[in-house]
Image (cartoon, rainbow, N blue to C red; front, side, top):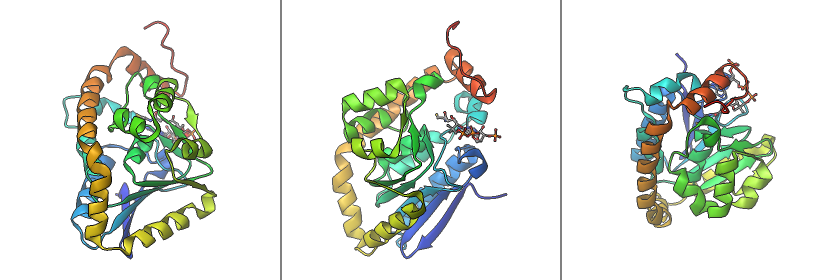
Length: 254
Ligand code: COA
């Protein structure tokens, strides 16, 4: 079976590639587990100075795999929270190289990246209200912290599409590049970072992130409680069914 996460250490930069290109790298149970184990191992490995996170096939990530969404609210152990926390707690620089689709968890993971470079093709969206859900991955806190409450609220409540220029202008991303140059630019920056002493990179990240970690923890706990209420609700089931049936959702009769 093909790995859902590919890794390659390039001179201290661990390139982590989300790898389900036929599903726009939507994250299924297997990928959550591989993501968790990848970030935990990268934190422990002194040969890794930083991680460069990207997606296979010209897209970053379409978020949670909606075809297996029932598992997210069944009694089965669903590895989302442990994977999300492994990324949040990763204590070395995390750099994103993001093009094409970045939706749901494929967007909110980026709010925990230290630097995000986006390609001109970026199509980012926080679709939670349109799915009968609410924000996840600490994004209810982190997006406000990154871009301010007003801008965050507009993006969450409207579920509008965010293009590359908007992502940079509002502070979600550091720079926009032509898609063809995106990976090499991000890798060059990550390589520049990886030359510095590991302890110094770790301590720098600690000073940058320590103000946020308690708030992110509280946000994830609150969000998980909301997801337990909303996942499997009539509006959520209608939204998921509509997606699988490739039709617009109809919330009018709920
Ligand atoms: N879960 C499961 N499958 C997904 C998926 C997801 N989150 N996102 C995309 N796919 C699948 C599609 O069903 C399609 O599969 P098929 O070829 O077997 O029909 C394939 O990936 C390609 O996606 P498609 O919808 O044809 O691409 P697009 O460019 O028209 O649209 C998106 C891309 C991301 C805008 C659209 O797929 C989408 O809205 N996906 C859901 C995103 C989402 O809400 N994620 C959950 C957040 S909590």
